[in-house]
Length: 522
Image 1 (cartoon, helix red, strand yellow):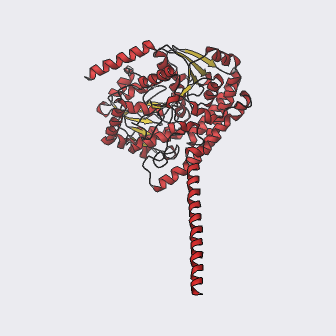
Image 2 (tube, helix red, strand yellow):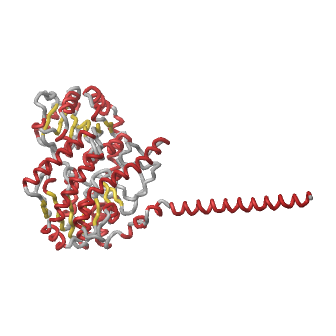
Image 3 (tube, rainbow, N blue to C red):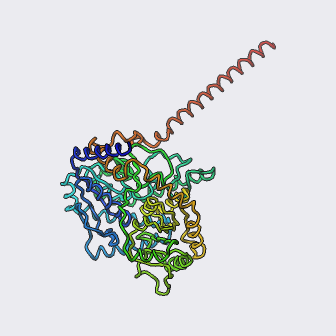
């Protein structure tokens, strides 16, 4: 019976592909690191499903660590003159280093958005690129909502767009139904199970984070004033609400359950790739440790580049206390000369992370807590020890701890002895592995794969001319109507007016009765 349903599903999808005309889709990437990886992957998926995909890529974000086979879809590179580009890249590296060492440092985030706002201004002045994009007459734009420049490009082109934010969805205020009693605000460090003081903190964090968001968005004000005519200048925060669909790079294997609008689709695991056999040299290294297995360590492209000598030294010392082998993504050129590599540790500039997470001998994943890495670990049921540095990494690890899949370690207090004990606890306590496997089952038990859901919804809005039927009216309501403040004020006024009238009537009755009593006494 199950096989029959699967065959019907496959037949339906094939028929739908035959009937659906290929669309022209523009994907935009002006941010680097995991943002580039995410947009590259979704571009491949859309192209593989039969659509004509063009990717607008800001060349400076094309990180060499992510270079693979030449993409089959069209790529348009935008870049600055070499001397100017070098200056900008150096500036960005300094900001990323500052961010890596400072955790969720809001002033640094503001400076980073200011940096990208200036780059966006340059991109919008490129008449050759903007005219080419305009002439292509795309059917749809797919963008990263954290990349504010891509929102302005879509607005300039006058095209419908869908959003695929690669980090925690709660980072942006999207007028989603997010009851503060159980939906934690980004940066609060809370779970969905809050006590009284937790709810107080969540409410205060909501207003604080809203102010932070406004400051970040304001870094594009000068770009908007320069490139949009007066009277037609968009409000950047309002552009977010124009998205036809929101694809969330997570699901309830990781995230807390909360209400969603119909145009919000969870596609956790979308970026996962088919597992390949690992290189023989890595297999030989793993085999040395027999049943003890191995630990995979990968702290992401940004963190790996900017981690300090002290952190490397403490981590290396901690790994030396483990019976497992340790495969560590760490550039040899950045390894401190006076730190001797532990005998059970192998460092490499690049490791096949997905393939190693799927290896039967893996016992633990030490991660920075980036969304892509966390999703891959959940996909393969691997428990984690997280060392979050900035951005959504802290929020991801809050969820990992709440789901009992792993433990978080603060970078400011990371010491070899306690770090080693934490790793041993997660490896030896079978409850972590059981929770990781439970999340894996949740992730993989959907009737459709993340890619099928993603492409299916894209095709849906292409066929129906948009997602107006999926958008609630709340997107058009002013904030005082959304929160029923006008209704509360009316009811409060009605109640106070009724109370005042009752008091007046009671006063009049009291005066009348008092007057009658006086008359009788006389």
